[in-house]
Image (cartoon, rainbow, N blue to C red; front, side, top):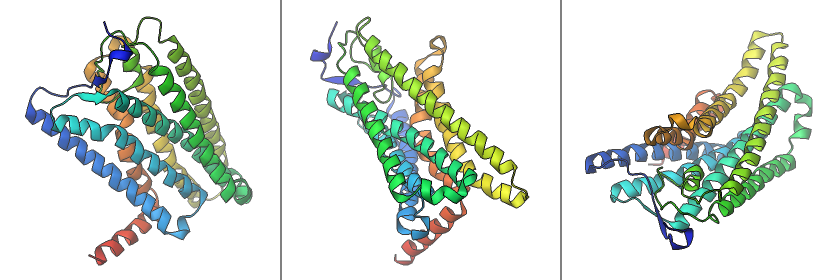
Length: 310
């Protein structure tokens, strides 16, 4: 038996017993990581460098890309390093930092997706009041509120989780430090406080989900009242990328935390965590750039300027 005061490191999930498979994991994660950094970096550069994209929608998209880069950088590099050096170790402090930054970044991202639903609602349902309701100051205040909410949520969860006495060793059966797997190491009944915080978080998540759904109900009603087919298509096209990103984010997160424990296994837990922590940051830039002509045009100009200087 051990407790948290004697634990100086945790052991993460080992992907394979052979060096060849560990190397395969390293190159696979490296490719995904570089694609996510490149895609999100291009969107950030495009929005920051083109004054035509200095609008509320693209301001929130820039924030979203920042958080996607941060969330994938929290988990994947450490997993790659462990595979490359044939190690499973992560320090106690490093594990706490992973939990804090992952909860902070993903909580804030969810808040941003909720705000972006409001942005689309105002743009389509109240276009004459768009400049008033979503002025520069309002956008900054909403983004700051999302950041502050995510920070407070992460602080509470991290402090609560790592103040628990740990009685069941230090092996985390996941490729990064995840709260449910750390709670499995805690002493009996000592995890109820953190479970209470998780219930509160679920209620807040559900509240945001209801807000997003209600926003899109109003959006679809407004779009269907547009007389021209071209107008309806244009309105839908501005919503589809956000709707796709929200669907991917929520579906993978819900599957990860609401799946039945009777179907839980080490390989399934890995796949589910991979889906919600690695796939969205890598896929989101592709979703937004594929359906957005302005982003594609600016990306083409940025790449043209870059390669012309080489």
